[in-house]
Amino acid sequence: MKDIIRPLSVIMLLCTAVLSAQNIENAEAISSFTNRLEEKKVSQVLFIGDSHIQADWLPGYLRKKFQAKYGNAGRGLVFPYNLGNTNGADDFSSSSNKAWETFRLVHDQKIFPKIGASGFVIGNKENSFIEIQFKNPEDSFDKVVIFHDEDMDRKKFTMYTETESLSRFIEKKSEILNHTAAKNETFHEIVSKYNTTTTRLRKLNGDRILRPSEGNVFKVERNYPVYNSDFEQKITEIGKYTFTGFKTTVNMLSPQQTFLMRSDIPEGSTFYGFQFLKNTEKGVVFNTVGVNGATYGDFLKYPLQVQQLLTLDSNLVIIALGTNEVFSDITKEEFQTNVSSLVEKIRSANPQLPILLIAPPDNMPKQSRVPEIVSWLKESAQKYNLAFFDLYRATGGKGYFKKALMRNEANKDGVHYTKTGYENQGEIIWNAFSSIKNTSK
Image (cartoon, rainbow, N blue to C red):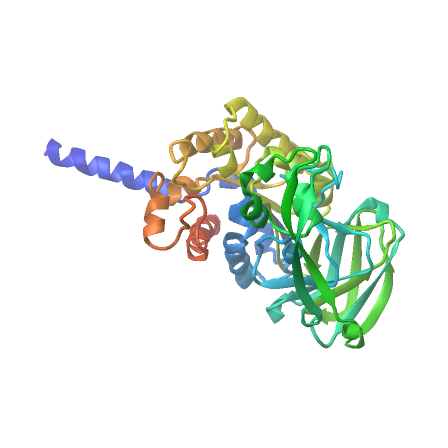
């Protein structure tokens, strides 16, 4: 009889371990948020992460789930990724009649001393339209918050409606040029100057361009828009406004699905993100800040970013970082110091702010390192009374990426997943969140 009971007990222990991995640990730490949802108020969620988050497939899945159940109070914080020649959410598009210099917080650059809310920056010194169009009518907005540089305080801008999209009046052109590297010029500064991509410049020059020295000559592809001003016959002015401080709020007279503004500041315009909201008394605003290549330490680089994010008055902050630390030689002390520093900054205005840490999933190149980072993250969550979700264990742990690859749910780079893969992870997180609701009733 003992021989039978022992294997059964082992099976039961294994099942318990798997089930516990599906749950949010220390869920009490986010109870004020879950209670707020039941009170049917407007709730702000801020989801911070790296390249797993920037594409928006995982947070986008959660956004749909939250808003389907609790109401849509706005699309939230977005960045015009198209203008920055990088990937982003596919539920909106962005266009401009001018080229913009752009960087994200992980780039080595001296052009922009500050980076704000979205972890990205765009700037130029030209009279420029910016258009952001949402594909889903349910994402129409009554209010927009523009995050910008403080030097734009009291400068003017104009907002419009349009009958045709700006993108139809833009022709994209490119040309191959020679570029001579200046003293102390960085690779990303060259990329930004020519409105091109890192992939394109590496293809033209090889990896030698990653470390340019003064006098080096490189092939570069300059990309630029050719603008047809007939567009200006398709627009109607809503009004003229004034930038204030480091963020400006504009209330719309009627719901809009397209945001169109023009700034003409000779000293330059610099933007860090745009938040879109609805005039409603209930629902969820799901703000996303995803930055390719980011670590916990990267989100400590620019004080303005946290300052602007604090003005969102978040009711829940979700942080899904750690994958890029897996590929570094960071020590436990350094990692946990970065985690605690970021938590402290985010909680500076509200020491009781609910925070949920999500562990990184499996990868192939450094799969043996992931459990170590996860364990450090879990310790930090316990120390600072944070909720914790072990996505690594919940998805199956070591070997999950290889299995996902076989199911066409992961990419061959060994790190990133496909849209289906990320949505499956989103479903796992949603189920874990839903289980809190079920047990709290």
